[in-house]
Length: 115
Length: 254
Image 1 (cartoon, each protein chain N blue to C red):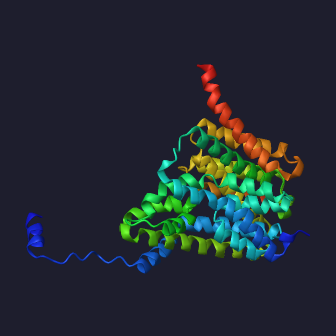
Image 2 (cartoon, one colour):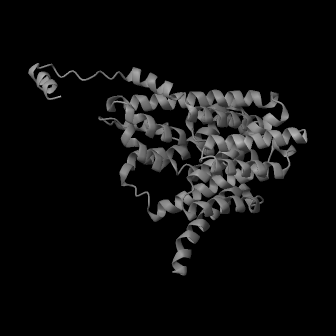
């Protein structure tokens, strides 16, 4: 049992580890405004790290799943995401179309496998 | 037109500006949240609520994270990291790195949000609502609002989106485990699916594609990294590698 499995401990973690480190960037955005050069080398590195971090989170959720997702075969998880990307690129770069394609593949696949 | 302007000048009306009532603008902003991007957002937060339940994270703290963090990637990193047993300082660094993209969003949208008489407190409040959806919708909706009413409108729009998302979080938390199998799984995978598609949508230059591929590719390799720092290494390592390759490879070729 960790202390964040209680409601109050979890709220404290959300404020200290979630809210403050994240809100920092909104604060800096207000304070520095236009003085930040979006194309500076520093910002390019920061953006690359942010994208890689998000991709790593997604990959972790897909490849090392927990809870109910464990029952789903890896090929279906990857196939659903891949079909979502394909749907997005083919259907006029619509995020909604991509999400719906992936979800349709997932629900049909899960239903077919009897998950 | 000439005659009208002459008449306008001939009758010296006291300069009564069209009254822009903040409460009215706030309410219009709230209604503006009821749009297609708003509903897509709610659906992804239903997925987040399901994830909370799946990782047995308390709902109250999950709702608080939607209200205060208000950035789904950071929330997923936080909750997923806690479930994986990552140390808190490493999680704070990971959350901090994931929030970097908010700064250019705030910088670019603020001229539309701050109105004619900017105050720091108003700007900080407006900035809190900035996330991908408000950023996209702000550029679409705010130019149609009178400048005096824009801070109130932006706050209304942001509050509406957050309220919808908190409702979505709670619905997902209670709904996911009552749904038949395939639909529960579809809900749980909604977050990774929408993140992947948003990453692909935002990728324009080689460095973006390299960062996605290297970040995702290094994640399984780093799973057993000591101290639960796997996300940190995959993100910082993959991102730095992508940055270096994109920056120095073309130079070597030419």
